[in-house]
Length: 371
Ligand code: SAH
Image (cartoon, rainbow, N blue to C red; front, side, top):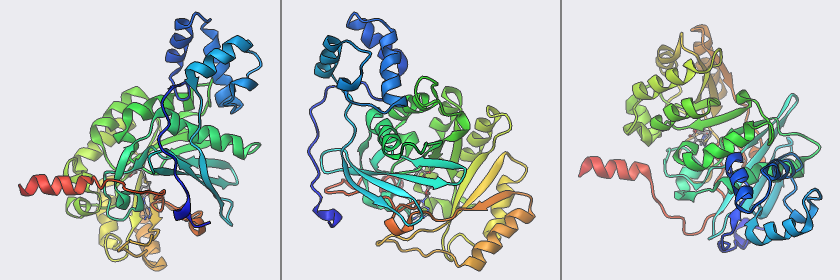
């Protein structure tokens, strides 16, 4: 069935969702309905360790309580519009988040781990020049329930395979939806929920500096930064938020972040665009910025999407870029594209959108500076 013919539902009338609710708020909720606080733990075990979202199956709750919860609250997961399987084992879900908006979630199996790549917004306002999500414009922030719901849904469908790592590298800018992302991160780490270690949860950001600094104190998980250019002149064009938070300010925040992380380094993502940011001179400039710092570089061969104006750098150019970084003493890896046959690779996630408003940071920044 062609994706365009999928019918997207309208927004659902809201009941309080217990999914994604911080543990303390869940305790408070049960106290407010005159139930024991340990009910919170019971519900969390059902939701996040057994992936059960039907109160009817929660056999250690009394049936009047189950009925009351079903009347007052919701555990609904975003409905699945489409499931796709890549030849390399990658899986992708297209999920309905109402009002003609859909988001994508991707699972990438590797011999030693299983990584779930989740979305934090329907669309994205940051307007990075080479990204399919940015091209679609921005619709809205996802709720904590919609963000964590992706992990619950995928965990259930993948069992007995386990999700060992979660990366916020799907659609959207997680640090532009800080309020809803933070409770999700806490639940991913909470032993009574998913119990992942800090190094197995990665927030990827295009550089929302104030929230990088906030995250450093709130929850010091692994950080990936989408750098993509070694000079402000070039980065202003490729990653427009650079016009608000330029490279020096961004890196200063990164080194502060790294101080709280013991021996862990920050990952700098760098998408290689043919003839744009991929020369040996660029690699040397990048080296200057990052050498002797707690940094490693993840080079991402550009993944094309229908409207993109860029091309992927040829393999010898990728090799030379990588070699220059390595010779300079920087740890660098080249990311192997996964799931590209089902458009699940980095930057190809566009969801399915109708009428998504084109709110684009790039336009606003340009508008502000020219007026
Ligand atoms: N907004 C966040 C997370 C989403 S994108 C961020 O910017 O980090 C996850 C990664 O994929 C980012 O490094 C992003 O720059 C990269 N990316 C986006 N479009 C791409 C494309 N077409 N090819 C390869 N990587 C891309």
